[in-house]
Image (cartoon, rainbow, N blue to C red; front, top):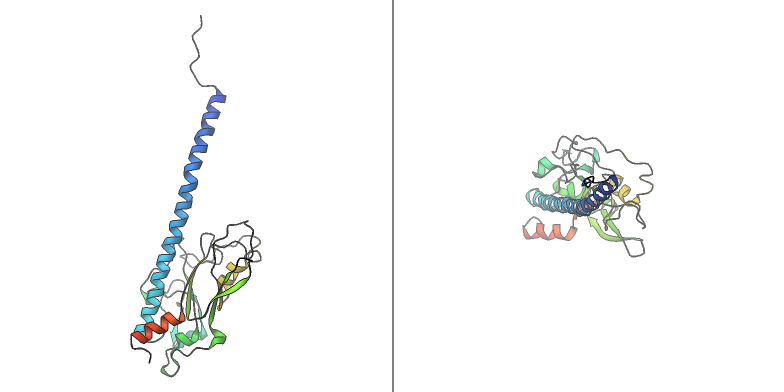
Length: 237
């Protein structure tokens, strides 16, 4: 009598591989989500450090720094008491502030400053001109844009995992997918505007909702926090 065949059939092997793939998938998806959450948390921590560095700079100097000279030169771009050429947005001046240059995805932070707060001429320190102040908006439950913060002295933006509008560590702009920015109005605002920004809950690609896909991480220096810190330090009357 012939011996029993103890090997696996192709069907059995296929079933086993399918089960293994399901198990690996159930493990990898949570790990991917954990990595993404850690990147967001790390970026938020760095942005909090940037906000404190900006306030510290203002306490030491009486004004906020200008944007960086370039993607490779992190010194603030200042000439004769004002930002060179009237520049008010660009890259966070990481060398001037002594902070991290890149977010958790390896992109340079975008930075915009209200000119009245970056002016180092003693006659015009911290004089607010609302026509050039920064406004931060969010979206309400119905999807409409509403003001979250106004008269903002300075803002720092990380363009998130998708990197729409971001610049890499070499100063090269990331390629944009087809359909953007038309389909991503909020991220487009964060990438192109100098005065109007959006901060809201993340929205995955393809998810329903107004404003399009969104994964930007946004922080700013609140006006009254800055003024209170300046007064407490004796920099303002």
